[in-house]
Image 1 (cartoon, helix red, strand yellow):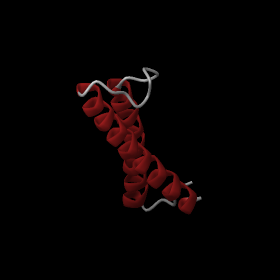
Image 2: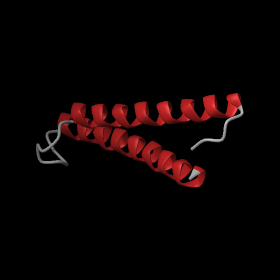
Image 3: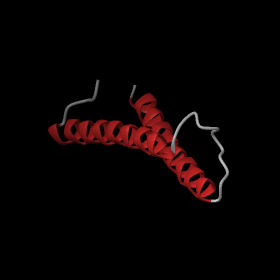
Length: 75
């Protein structure tokens, strides 16, 4: 279970930074008059999604730290 949680955390962390990178690239291309996402998602919405993913990652990491400090085995 611990390995699965670690894998999920890494995937979510990587996904958040990929979304952030796409949002920044989209914003730059919008300044030049082009678009990558064809108006489906704005760059601000992509940054919001990245922030939500990072909040979940931080929450799960803090839970792991708390469980490790108490000496409990994470479930």
